[in-house]
Image (cartoon, rainbow, N blue to C red):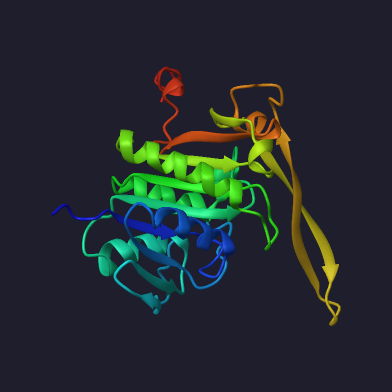
Length: 256
């Protein structure tokens, strides 16, 4: 008898996030699910790992079809702990999300959702990070679940190259309002941070991070930001090799 698939689910919004519950509903159709997620929000933690304090785990659910663990740590901590301590074998699939808010363009660098997916790719696990462009706690995940299922089916059928994971972003809207899926590249842009300086009740200064996104190519139709702006689901293949291969020959000409 063929062994059922083992699917690892994590996120950066925390184990109580509605997006995580929506993702578990989808992947439960594909195999046995193990959730290992932060006990609280870890948004913006990128690929951070915990090294200065112990990691603590609490069991939230324990049944044959679904096991769930909450970790006092980062999304990447969750993946590493799952691989090393909590899973009986390497999972057949790792999914992260569904994140509340976009992880398109350069946001992939900051995203804890994508940090977890990238960690899966490093460990040669088929891995996908899912995000919905809705930050609200009561976001509607109905269309996102349909596209999530479709994309997971294709990854399980076709596989991914070693070290590659997928960054999937889904626009806000009902199913009939989303125009389909676009395979994209990452938009060239960056976040212009601004810090709002304020005073606390004790007249001490503190700073609140704000800012806006600078898109260097708003009309480029092969980018994720264009796809999302035009009501398409964007899929960007992400690799862990940060080498700028175009610059190698230039640097080799330096007199060093």
